[in-house]
Image (cartoon, rainbow, N blue to C red; front, side):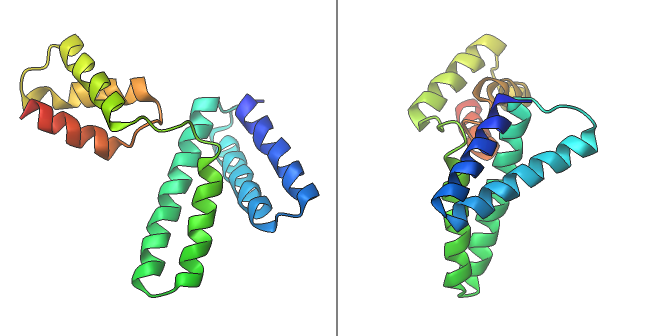
Amino acid sequence: MAEFFQKLQEEMKAAMKSGDKDRLSTIRMLISEIKKVQIDSKKELTDDEIVSILQKYVKQRKEAYEQYTKAGREDLAGKELKEIEIVQEFLPQPLSEKELVEIIDQTIAEVGATSIKDMGKVVKSVIEKVKGRAEGAVVSKIVKEKLS
């Protein structure tokens, strides 16, 4: 069993004992998502795969938050925001923009990228290096600025 998954289970037990219903329901939902992917793929998931599931979950929650905010449903938007905060506790700390730019500059040099035509190679390489510590859209935007 992945170390990450065990940590989630321990956190679930702690939330049960403390009576934190919001935290408990969010962690249960995460465990359910992970188990669903595990059953569908018929294999044991790695920590990296679990992190990507959590990132996808956060992205969905952010989209729901935006929809609820547009619709004026602050009660539901607040619930989504709380879930996002709980899930982000389990994700690796995001890179600062400065750190990300350094990694991108280094990768551009490694790949030998000179024009926008090389953007795909650079973005792919950077995404592999940052493994969930930066959003793909942000990486693409910075790479595009650097290669333009």
